[in-house]
Structures are given as C-alpha cells and as structure tokens.
Image 1 (cartoon, rainbow, N blue to C red):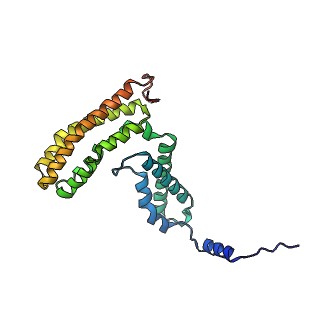
Image 2: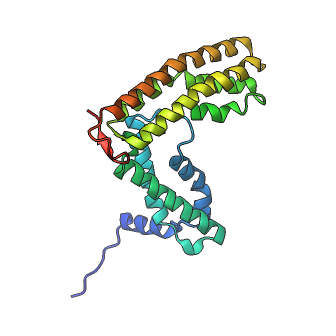
Image 3: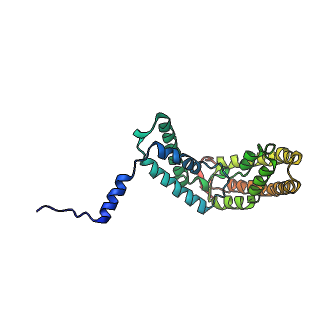
Length: 233
C-alpha cells in the first residue's frame, strides 16, 4: 500500500517560505558586514559587565551560524576575502570570550584612556561635541573600573604588568597632553570646566586600578610562570 503524504495548508506555507528564502550571498554579506564587524571589534566605549559580555557572546554565535549558511559560490573575489576575514574574526572573538575567558584574567583590556585618545584628535575640529563625548565617557569612569575589578577573577601576570605600564603612561598623558589641549581649546566654558574636573577625578581612579592590579600580581600563587593564568586569592 502506498503512503499518501497529506499536504495541509500549514505544510504548503512552510514549503512556500522555504522556496522563497534565497541563500545568503553577496547582498546579505554587504548588508551584515558592518554589524558583524562592530560585534567583533571592541574599540567603542562600553561597560564590559556580565550582561554586555553575555549579549556579545550570543551575538557572536549568531553571526557564526549566519556565516556558516553563506553560499561562497555566490561571492565575488573581494567579498570572499571579506567573508573569510569575518569568519576568522568571529571565531577568534568567541574563543577569547568563551574558552579563554580573556575578560576575566587580562587587566590590560581595561583602559579608559584608549577611548579618550581616540576622541582627542577631534578636539581642534569639533571642540564642543568632542568635549561632550569625552565627558560622557569620563562620567562613567568609576563604574568602568569597578566592573573591571569585579570581572578579574584571575590574572595573567605579563598582561598585568602591561596594564600597569599602560595606566602609568595614561596618567602622564592626561597631565602632559590632554589637560593642556583642553585648556587652550575653544570649548564653551561650562563644558571645558566640566571636562577638566572629570579628568582630575579620573586620576585617583587610575591610581587605584594600578594599585589593584599590582596587588593581584603580588598575591598570586606562583610568580615563576609570568604567562600562567592564576586565580586571585
């Protein structure tokens, strides 16, 4: 006896949707390249708390799945290169966050001066908007470093030393370069005063972070392996 497949309206709808779905190719890659790149890169200012890291990991895994569905035969040579770069970037970001858990043992990831330096180049071009953007970041400095210390459940000693060196350099950059640049710039007085105050408030926060990282280094179980990740006591 032959088995008769009953085609219900629901089955018809599913088959129609499946037939209408075009494979991911050139157009999809162009539309999604910026979103994927933004997720992979961490050069914009964020507070890397648990909620952010969980969401980023979820987004990365979604991108990984989407990229696995791309039909590379539909891509141009240029787009194939872009596709490969994105795939590698997503895979490395997932490994760093999920397997290596880099946010939990690398103190050098947390440096608020990197975001300020990126903006400072625009002080002469767009003084008022740049000052506002810098003030927005600086107003969250205390939270940023509080989260950084809470995240660091372990330490990789060599990266800890790098973090200390970078923050000492950042402290000098604030004093020697940023403050003079703000003082001489044509920023509206109220915004300028706010910015200078916020910079001064950042200094003790940086000193505290340097001390915290130094204490982690000095209190780990074994200093003979500077590349080993060691849980903090």
